Length: 294
Image 1 (cartoon, rainbow, N blue to C red):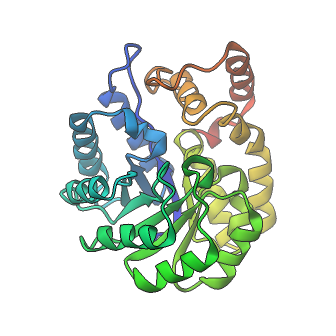
Image 2 (cartoon, rainbow, N blue to C red; image 1 turned 135 degrees about the vertical axis):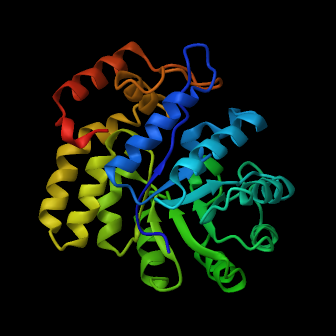
């Protein structure tokens, strides 16, 4: 159901911190031109926790109007409150997404019965669910036995965005559920490794800047040109790593600002990146093949 390169769309802002809707639309158009297979709206990279309700609605209205029928659309609706997650999902359904991205509740660290009940509540609304597993941000690593029970009891979970760096866990998920779920890479720097164990694609923050390259990496791999795919990834690897010199999306938004998509502004509690990291990124961008960036 979810295959290919999905860009976790950033939210361009003006220097004063207001959402730059014009830059947002141009950024989305650039993603579509690059050939991405889908976009994720209101994910982590969008700085969703800092967006007001009216801003979220405007972002969804503008982006779905522009992308509907061209690529698949996933909307992030997860929160650490089940009631809020259900409300967010119901609001998102007004924009007819292909699926909703629901992170495992953060901070609460739910026990197994609570986690399964959480996803069951969201599932009652009927939208296909992409479960977002990112222990580094949520503080919750879902044990394999809990995943097993969850996938058995909540058939609406059709995909997992996996952002765990525990490769033993990644391998076990890939081996256990190749036909049950779409397994999506959530770590830009491990994209070829995920493809090699059967991942159906990637939800990528770095694709905001490097969408043409990520699409080409994916397509080459699917064509059986694995060596060429990896060689292109290796060429891009220093810039992929540079996207995470500081907390996402601070570096990506700095890169986007250098390309004319809004300012480098992020909303507190995130702050602008250091002068040292700006200089590193400037050097990398000056050297990159311009065909690999939007």
